[in-house]
Image (cartoon, rainbow, N blue to C red):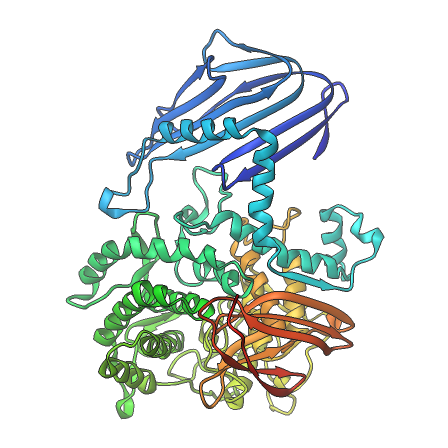
Length: 635
């Protein structure tokens, strides 16, 4: 970034957060000499500020109210000026400088390990180790290593299409967003939104660390909205929707590892609330230490377990399936086996459920029914993959088959509750009763009645309820132009747009899905492309990446003999149809998918093994035609 310092001096600034070095690197190059002052401040009570002149480092260290120790260090790595530490012992001045490189490390003694009391190494010691390693590496190699590490991951997927005009591409982002808000097209910005979501998840969710929370990794407040927590009723799950389809599966480890670390705390809390049950579940708000708060979101454990199943299904790693996925999923199933109650005609109901954040708590809420069924169906498949006892496999299948299913209501809608009381004028932000459409896998082209009912419900939430006489059901008609403007009120939330985009994509309605992408840009995106709720909330950025992936590839269906069915361009919007390509998307079964198109028709495609455990065969749907394929093992 180029800017001007006081006096009109042109300054080029660069900043990057290096995962290999585990710290921030700040570089400054000026056309004329400058005087730079360095100092640290802290809003945390009891923080001690100090300076180490020999190491050319400023420090801020202390202990938070929860006994968590923290340390911040700023080290001068390179400077062509004169460095002078002030008499106050907590600041420094650099005179006559044109080149300056700073290393910045911020760390705590948090460890993702309850056996160690969630505490690890002394943060100041950790910071010194990071600084010493980075100093030995030097700025040029730090930058090179950072780019190599990040580019290997970001370059796995390449999405191309018709570009915006050169004049539009030359505009700053805020002006491009203003154009879109006024109804103008900017296809390059839509593809940038896809790539940005991948970058943000890669940057805020790494192996061994904590999962991305509501603000990702970018919380800037000591009193953030919702405590910058982990929300288990959609937000945390949405953050990881792009992990598999957009080929960054390693980001999922942070979520799965944190859940494993939290299980003992969750088991205790669950038994305290629900009595002598096996397994565990969670409340809506969760902390890094396994803590729970606010409303019980009883179905949270089942939804989390589906992420573990999805991670396995997209990678087909035998060791992960046997050592991590199966024990995790089986324990969650045990909770639900102890929890489910018998309904009419012997069907099973999830008791005392909630359709977040909507309506009363009662038995058989459709959101819970669908997620629990998805859990047991996936668990049965996983049990077979790991060679679990046949009796156990039969038990899982029996539960899945006996879960009470969806109901279609009086105005053609998919019911949100067992009782038919949905309001067609309800614009609630959640679409919880459509889980089986996405991210679930039960509502597919093989269930056309349920697909149509889901679309009626979805359109109503988007401001297009059916007419009173039923003669013009929106589910049977193309959505209107400027469809995103019909979405109003409570439905205009950063994370509602991506979920609805993915839902429309699963329905095969590319233009409606595209309208939701545009809606996020028009109404819920800040000038830096962060999604805003308000305040800013990263789940919208993560979710829209997954939704765009779903517009291009589906892999949630199975053929009659159980093979993975991959649909190419299932919801390609008219605006993207003239020409485009995508390479590197991941499909279930451990597959990698690439496809090119012209005038809405597939011109080239490939489906290959992405992992050593990939399936050996699949069925690919190309322009509506099913093509069986053999999949060569990954090299």
